[in-house]
Image (tube, rainbow, N blue to C red):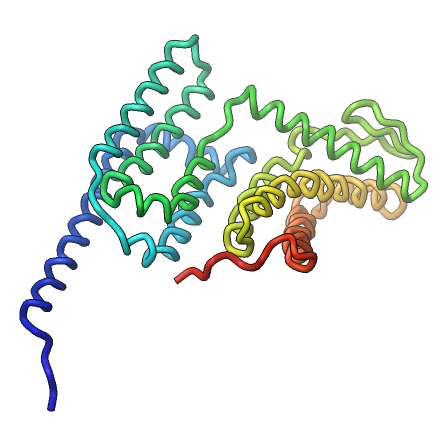
Length: 306
């Protein structure tokens, strides 16, 4: 004999479902409002990410954040509640920060762009807290804070990062030349070899692949590591991996150009072979994670994602 659920339970489920749809609609409405307010800055960053190496990773941030949030949706939606007080408090703090930054001195165009995107990401987090509450935010804290990576670095900061990568890559390449018994003389980011001189230019610093590798590191750490300290250690470890894979690229291209064919210095491997060395860096990340697990530094994988 077939049984039917009690009318009260059906009505309660319908009400709960309708309430959740209304909550999602409210969140989406707030996000669309933020997009409308910051549409110029968002359009500029989206356009620049297609043509500018330093911004190319930004297009990945929102899809990855949304995917991670979707993977944790059951735990996020287990305890939701509107929290306008917390949301408005966050909005007030962001407004105070923006006001202070705006009046602390003349902002450059890149700094103003960074501040605009930072405020947009903050509005997305604020909208989430407003619609779903603090408990849901604690569960979804990583996907939400991951949005901060869409903030482009100001030119002054970006120049320093590129300079560090340039010098680090030159040092790593020189270590490989020394190991291969190839004589060299290094002057900053210029390496003089027996037949050629190599200049590690800004576009050769590996900033694009390094930023993507950083995103991969954070995501892999979240998915495969449980301890906060091992996640932090993995993030620190990726810095020498960035430098090492770019130094290896310089070493390989230079040796091929000297001893095989000079066209390697300006051929397809130079312009299109970056994915090979990125793959080596990516494999290095997995090795570090495996090593953490092997030596017992991390107790196990993170909690399974529904």
